[in-house]
Length: 114
Length: 111
Picture (tube, each protein chain N blue to C red):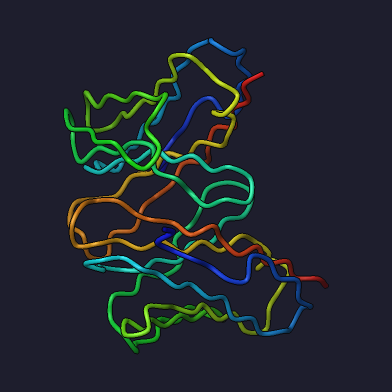
């Protein structure tokens, strides 16, 4: 009963490096989301997807890219890492149909840019 | 311009106390309000509220929504140390697929 799985759990990057944060879900959910959470702050939406092949920007998309080639996977890419991207990143998914469909979250990826 | 505001930002209580957490919102085309509990890792879902005045209850936790005054409260009675967490509130709208989160209330329960 895996739910939403994020890898890696921790990562340290140097400024200017790139990396991909992986997210996969096994609940056949159509909707998937990427958030960042800074200390003492709520969750800010980076990108989301309503199904394979469809993605859209959230509140803070700059510096990130996403793709959704399958229902299960929704990777988040940082092309040129900057210190401002130091944060905890959460992936979430939810099923089709709006009512009674809360998001299910992964355990997060803690990313530090030095 | 914040859509969702939670108060207080943090709270320290003793075991057995009752606490009330607040969430006010300002969005157009309101659809639902959700409460999550976040301990060390992922937020976990507590309640979803869509109608005014109907209390949702789960054990010692309960929540209610006031769509006229645009707020919700989360009550926790007889608090335990295991209730220590950040409690997040989020709202959704009829248009779009986004969830808008508040900054959370950090609750610490002291034995």
